[in-house]
Length: 252
Ligand SMILES: NC(=O)c1ccc[n+]([C@@H]2O[C@H](COP(=O)([O-])OP(=O)(O)OC[C@H]3O[C@@H](n4cnc5c(N)ncnc54)[C@H](OP(=O)(O)O)[C@@H]3O)[C@@H](O)[C@H]2O)c1
Image 1: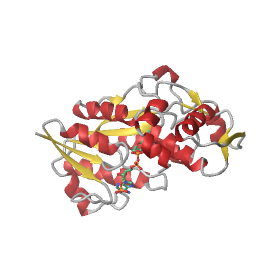
Image 2: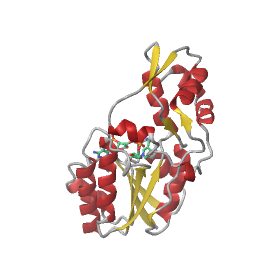
Image 3: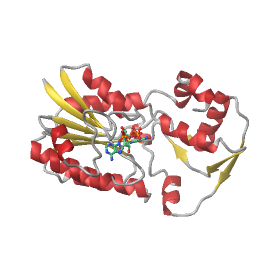
Image 4: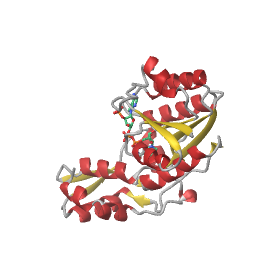
């Protein structure tokens, strides 16, 4: 019996990863700020974190927030993992964290390096955006009668369930270092994704493309966050919308 700790195991990705790992002969612990008995704020660490990692073979690190603190969280996690003799840390990152000078991406890149230099066995998987994130973005932009989209930006969304399959596979294996990126099946303009969303929801909105300023926007426009050479995902954005039709139409 091996023991795996999934940080952020209640999140969009983490809950699918936890489910998959539970099907094997494994103890799976789920850690998040609100998930008992392993309710831990990783930014603070402390005794509860030490308890959560004790006896753990593999950590799948999915906990994250764009609101800040991921580096402090990773430092605490790595220190606790080293003390507990954890053999393998699997980290989920984003395609382009080293290309796009966007605050959250810089933090993810710094966390990658922390894990790679930790002395622990490690695996890092970068993927493109999940369909869920694109939907959340479009739902927010669709609240106004005119949908303003950053001009000339593309995306390559991927099904979170496929990312979870791969992360669970990596967690069951040994440390593999930086593995091949995973991208969604199609590189699409934001406009085309927005039109699919509007069609699925039956909403009518004017779509206006707005050029933005700044280095991060230029890097997104140049496709630094895309992985067309690794378009291994199968599920399309339309299939994702259709599978969640009720939720999508309700705009929740
Ligand atoms: N979304 C995407 O498109 C995408 C693409 C590529 C990679 N990723 C990466 O995949 C990972 C998971 O993303 P997601 O979309 O599944 O995120 P999510 O749904 O926001 O889930 C985040 C999880 O982290 C936990 N968490 C947040 N701050 C924490 C803290 N300080 N201490 C302990 N737990 C904390 C949350 O639970 P509590 O609130 O209970 O703490 C939750 O379980 C992230 O590393 C993200 O960068 C995401």
